[in-house]
Length: 116
Length: 112
Image (cartoon, chains in turn green, yellow):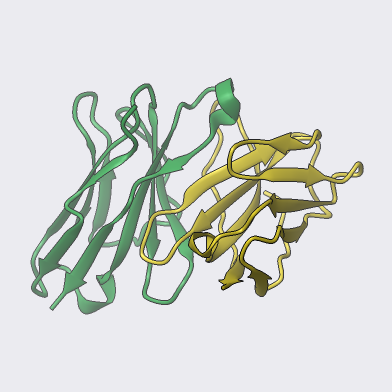
């Protein structure tokens, strides 16, 4: 059973470009979460999505950041007009969304964004 | 979600049991205790979770006190690869549940 798959694992963007990070949840999981970890800091919740719905985006910056989880295909975290402060590791996680197995959340290995 | 308190760091000798404490005195009756760890430059790894009873799996054991105000994660035979930051998180699960709120965790260092 494949885990949470994220790509690209490493991404370099120049200031002002767009970054797109993709996440395929574990098989059978319908809930996706995105977290950000700045260098030498803790994990911060960004957004929680179900298929075609954003459930909680309280951790998303108000500008330049957006997330989607379409009916078909992976979840995408999009960062427009990147700045150096966006350099971080972005982790995607998924869960079944039901009470089965305690609705445990599993994480991917992360996408490391570097803005130059 | 209820807050948790963990020591910032701990050392343990290789081959010995590592016992990581966590206080969650404001935990609600429907909140589970979850443990994750993050090895440097990797994604958080799920370890174990429990509600009231003690739990054991291939990675660790979780001991929850009867009043549920604290718990201990036990790694029975620590190896160098267990060096990581360990996070104790309390969370309501089920349909419509939110995500995980990570604190600072405990940096466990396994000494050779």
